[in-house]
Image 1 (cartoon, one colour):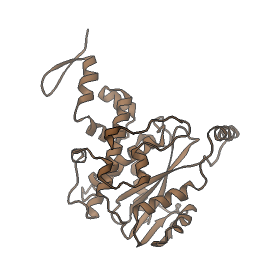
Image 2 (image 1 turned 180 degrees about the vertical axis):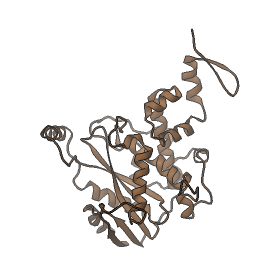
Image 3 (image 1 turned 90 degrees about the vertical axis):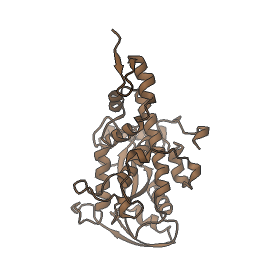
Image 4 (image 1 turned 30 degrees about the vertical axis):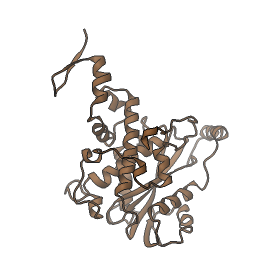
Length: 322
């Protein structure tokens, strides 16, 4: 017996095949639903099962949402940092735990506004068995090793991107050794660098609290960043696209406090007068030619972030997307 479905709007009946290929794939509200699902710790296949679509469709929509959120943030973000910010590197991995990756985050100390991020490849470190060390050596011989100063270079690129003009800046960070080296290459900024140990309690009185809270939200909202998960990102590019979605949600949609329901970080910074709805974020299609998108962030839009184990990964170069 052929399974049939009825549209709740027009009453039209659909067969199972039509329901899958014609109805759901053309639903105008599918993007907002996937937007919310990607922030609710759901993996691509879970979302696909819920909406009865292919996992590749969810992947395509997630990439499209990530590109849109990048441009949306570029349009609204301030082109200077507030007087005090917090810098941290969020550690995750791509493809397998032999390929750690770091997302370098900058958040406002007062507003908690998530200004932006860059990413770095890392070499697997820490405690390993002899078999794991042999496996790492074999993978590095086959695919190469990450640049040893990648964190320094990407933190430098991030701060140059977020603060292109001279300004005084109070920067809080942990004890990472690459941060001071990156700050030496920013002569246009009057940086006061204050280091806080990562071992002290991570309470709201900790100077690193804004970025510690952001780290918690990233792990809480994304299935791909759990400590032990089978939903990990196969490419850093995909992880970055999901992080752009979380950035827009955190800055422009989510209240600063869940219990009080008060202003968003963008409202605390004076960029907006009220929280936005997801429908307002997705109301109009955006193109990179409308804004001056930094070249470092254009690599995310063009899907050019490499993954060593996937040499022929797809990029985004459609004619009408630019």
